[in-house]
Each structure stands twice: as structure tokens, then as C-alpha cells.
Length: 354
Image 1: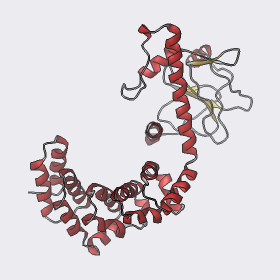
Image 2: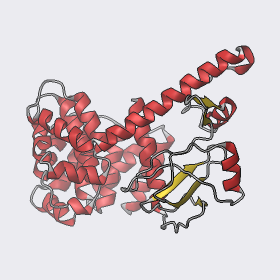
Image 3: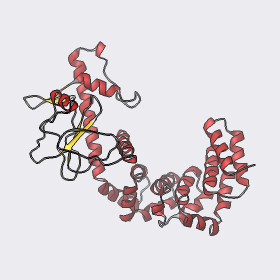
Image 4: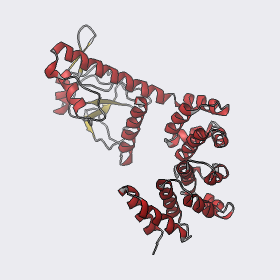
């Protein structure tokens, strides 16, 4: 689970960086790298852990792999050019990202700025950072030892996460082989697959590697939990992406509206298929009597949350049957949860209920 959080952190940082990015224009001098800018290949990158700023310049063949000292950091902040730098390989991947909290001693062993480590961790939200030792109750040497162990352990965890991301094609091939010959328990494989498929490029690779047909076959698996996990994967892979409109599977998902016990997962997969695909929606409504099936499932929903999700999907798809207003009204009247209450109100407004 910790690895998944690291994945999520890396993915979120990447998304936020690219969503409003423009390409950084580098020179031979160190410059502050704006957080929203994308980084072209072939640059040296340094990260100032004290200020949170990134610095970049054009890489040179004679630049070394020096670890930056405090004096060099201060020089960068003053706009002065310095020698050396973190290594960036020809593919543009970051090599040695600078950590001001760690400087190289003469014997080759790293020495650490423990106060800086502590301040760095304290910037992380409390529910996301590790438990830090209390300096006021521990001898200095013990406090430093515990801080170093936390720091080194976190760096190792991040490195493993990065390495595993680089091995995604191998991981996908392994998962595809497993689900192609399904066993009684596929929970861990499908959980990992669903996470990976949240990346559009990985979803595309999964399809190219012929993973889609065996995933759809799992929708007929005798174990309801396996079917739910497979539906989750289907919905995440498609996630309303128009590029994947020609992927098959509607005929496998739609019949589960009236038979699978986890209506929420069926709606999740169905919504991913229909919201961005007029051709699938047309087939669902004209050839599968889809609106009647969806409405029947909503009426029979065991929980208000599933009924509300049905109402949301109907509103998103612009389904015309006036009985959808009754489904939304049921949620509105029976739900004590403010979130469900508000969602039902929004659904009724979108359905233009009188």
C-alpha cells in the first residue's frame, strides 16, 4: 500500500506539473525552474530542499556528479555560476537530484543535515509523513540515528517505486499471463492492474499487449469479488476516454446491470464506456434496451449510493425517461448524508425535474 501511495504521489506531481506547463528555456547558467514548466531533455537539474526550488542549466560533457554543498546552493541563489552538477542522462531522465540535507564527507560516507531533514518532513501533511522522533526527549545521537533511518528508508522506497514504474511492460505481461489462466484468487493482480490502468499510456499498452480480452472474460468469473475487481479495471481503463471508443466490452458489461450484486462497480464500468462514446451509447439504448435496464437496476438498488450513481449516469447521458426524477427524489428524501443529498439535487436539476 505504501508503494501505491508513492506511485500516486509521483503521478499527481507529474499531472500538476504538466497541466499548465510550458517548456523551460535553459542557458549555461543556473536558473530557477518554475514549477509549472516542462523540462527538455539534456539538462542538469538540482533541487534545493530548503526552499523547494528546482534549478536547471544546459548539461555539458565535462560536468561531474558532484554533490552540492551549502556554499554552492547559496551561490545559485545569488545567481552565480558554479561548477559540477547533478547528472542527466541522454534520455532526459533526472540523475542525481540534489538534496541539501546530505553532503559528501571526505571519507565518501554521506553526512546529513538532520535539522533540514526534520524541517523538510514537517512541511508534509501530518497524516502523510512518517512518525518523527522527539528531539526534546532523546539524546542527540539517538535522535540523529532515527532521523537518518527514516530518511534513508524513504529514499530507498522512492527509488524502488521509480524502478518498478520503469518495469511496467514486464508487470503488465505478467498480469496478463495470470488473468489469462485465472485461479480462484486474483485480488492482488487486479488491484495492481486497476492502479496501473489509471495511466492512459499504460491502458493503451495493456490493450496492445492483448490484455483486454482476458480481462473481459473475467466478467464471467464465478466469484463475484473477481467480477467486481474486473469491472473496476474496465472502468478505470476507459475512464470516459474517447480514444478508446472502439474497444469492445459493452455486450459483456451491460447484462450485469440486472445480475451482479455490486451495482456500483457495474455503473462505474458502464459509465466509462458510455460517457465519451456516442456510438456505444446508441448501441446501448437502441440494441440493448439500455435505459429500461438501467432504470430497473436503479429501482432495485439495495443502497441509496447505488441509486444515486444511477441517477448521475442518467443525467450525464441525458436519458429522457421521467421516472429518473423519482429515483433522484428517493435518494433526496431518504438520505441523511449531505453529500448524497446534494448529489441527488444536482441530478434532478440536470434531468430538469419539475
